[in-house]
Length: 183
Image 1 (cartoon, rainbow, N blue to C red):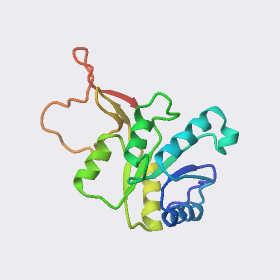
Image 2: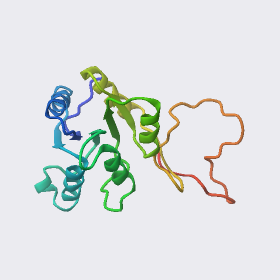
Image 3: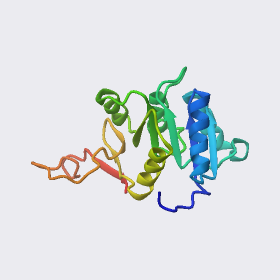
Image 4: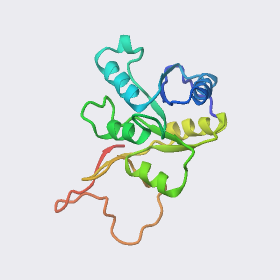
């Protein structure tokens, strides 16, 4: 991993398994992350983010630079939490990088998370190297955000590949269907 100073970096870990939570927190500490907050499900994470917006001192942090969230939790799972982050008017930061942690890395699960605006996926079991690689990718290759009628999130295209036909993502005066909201 590059030698980044992550001492001012803040991470929200949303995980219902205490063992996985401790592994993720330990990974963050080893990588030098300054602030790590934990929540046991998406509902608790939402309440923490709301508190952070109204009373950052009581919340223990002013902002979140990265969300690491498990997929399967109860009562509010990772997808519902991701949907709230990207679409809800009370979300403090719709642009926050969101890494979904899951043991289900099949194409259907990845597509469902991608379509809700996940930034990246981390498959279980993971290593500190895979967590570090995700952090480096988020830092060195941030993706622009796209807003359409039915999608808000990071650009789903990771690579600039040749494209046959007209690029439908470009704005024109006739049909403004896609808006790049953050580069």
